[in-house]
Length: 251
Image 1 (cartoon, helix red, strand yellow):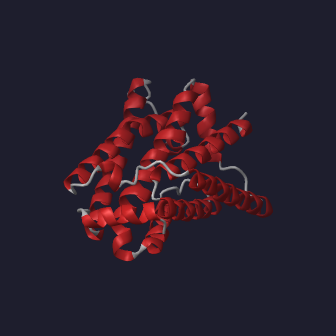
Image 2 (spheres, helix red, strand yellow):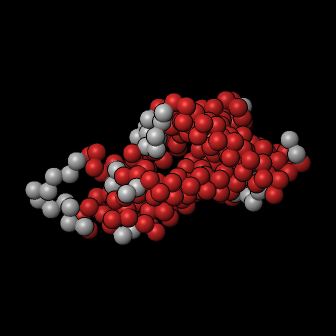
Image 3 (cartoon, one colour):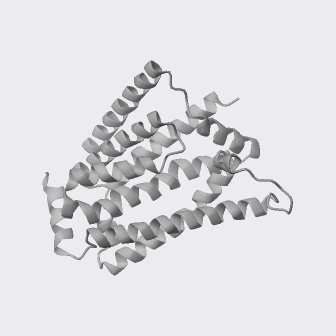
């Protein structure tokens, strides 16, 4: 552990923070806020576009692959979830930036993160080729529907910026800060990576496994750099590549 990381961890240990059980309780509440706000965002979009008019049939599978609906859901949920965490951290009486490790990473950590991310994506690509995996239909369908609706910029912003910010502050920010001092960094990294992977069950199991591996890498980088800004940037870059790849495959 370098001097900066050690000083930051000592600072948090000397100030108040939520313990493991309180952290899990707050996280459960955040999950409810996330579900409720994303559902509300989807309903608002459907009402605005007239799809909720009486007699209109709406299939759940169609909504799950609807890029504009998902973008609207993320757009509404992000400020509400971040506001919820800001309230929880305020009650812990720690500055939000310190609690969530919102610090600019050093250049060497950025370089290490890029190399690690490239290695995971390369390994996953080779594994996908050898096992005959194809790009998830979820990605191409959401891109195609966003393109056809003329909301690609909003779609890209939601998935390349808002979703990474929301997820990294949830898993590598709030959960890591509350659990790591109690159960250790690596059990925390493993647990949060598993939960993060499970919430992406719209993908096939191969890609859920890839997401778990990415979560472990992001957690390791969070531990090493003491920066969630680094994992946000890498997560955002990864999502941007995924959207661009989906665009290349969509016809």
